[in-house]
Image 1 (cartoon, rainbow, N blue to C red):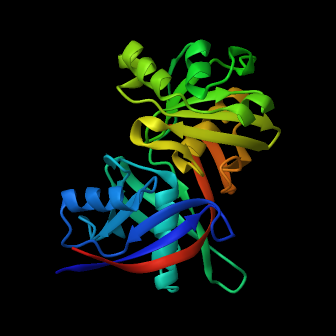
Image 2 (image 1 turned 60 degrees about the vertical axis):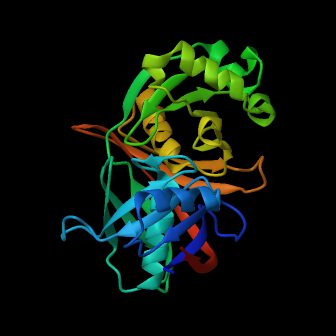
Length: 297
């Protein structure tokens, strides 16, 4: 039998049993692809990460991220939580990690308290903001299970956007729409079937309600088993970039609250900046440890 150590943490929160759950295998050497996928399905969390030696010794590690059904090129809270786990295990670790991931090289900066102890991390989206197609209001409303009148279109139509991770359908809604939303799996399936080129065969819905620099958000991705996500860093970064795009400013910062409706309140601190290559975004926050143990295979 082989034993592999794991740690679980709650990400984007300072309170245990809040935020978004993550399982981290700090040393995944010896695990096959199939075993990683099976372990991610067994944990049944939105994501599980596996840390391996880097292919380039100048980088910190190779990090593989799996959701319940497949490997992901990039995701936000798994990078924040993985950096936190590695940083807490070695408080003398460098300020910034460089993780090799399918979406590209990901930089994650550790956050520390006044005493120097690691409290969290901030991750940079690996690619500039890419704005995709707009989709019909009726489609977004059906997926969210809310009336079309709850979709706000004064600033934009429901818009697909990404910056290295999965595309998200960014959709502004009324406060009442945000509170009432409940994903409709059938509507998600119809949306992908009706718009295969725009969706690339996958759809994740990120609805938001903005109040100045504070944004309330909810994320639904039932096609991969995540009916609702407590905190989605890889949706917060394209949303931050998209808000900056809409505002026309050179930089901006937002406090994003997610997971409230599912009893796991999360706080993501997102920022974006215009650069020569496009709009780049970052998201950070705190993490707390929850469980540790071994998986025996």
